[in-house]
Length: 112
Length: 114
Image 1: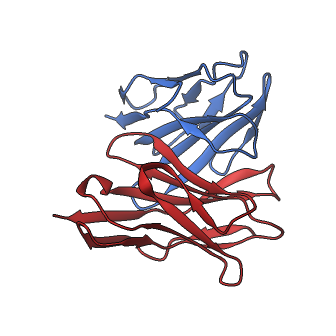
Image 2: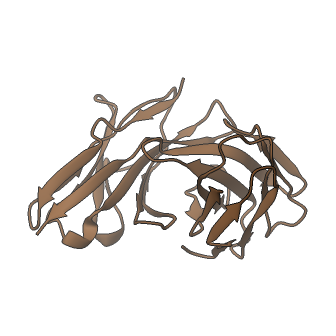
């Protein structure tokens, strides 16, 4: 899983709660990404950031928010507006948008 | 629109036999193509990529992929499968029309039978 860490590994959320997933990288990569993985659907892009203090919505950004205050960190908040948040969340980084991405080990979020 | 397709949800191969996991793509311009592998409850691991040059690309763990421009394919191959190769494999392509983001296929589950 390279130099990317995600925490926690498992997360349980009650209805109406916001939760924040952590993603940290020590690869000195400029670009960072958040994906959601559901069975049989591959990876869907939530948000991405190509540089500090800047980020863009991906394909399924509704109900999620991010920040990129430091190069090493790209936390994802799953808000109560996300109606079906139970999924496996993957963070990735790359040196540039042209290069391969390195993935963290993932966080499995379950709504109780 | 840029896209990538993995036509097989699952592939079964006997240990020691050659394996192929198929991928086709649709892009405008020259494609940047990638293969990743995912083991259960883990993140994806990069296997190999094609940007330019030789059509046969060699990657990690003995895998290779053949770029075929006329058939718009980028199939993943290995001469002799191991049980430990059993995993979920993703093909991906760079989307030059959308900030160079990567588009992933839906994945192919590879089962190597002992």
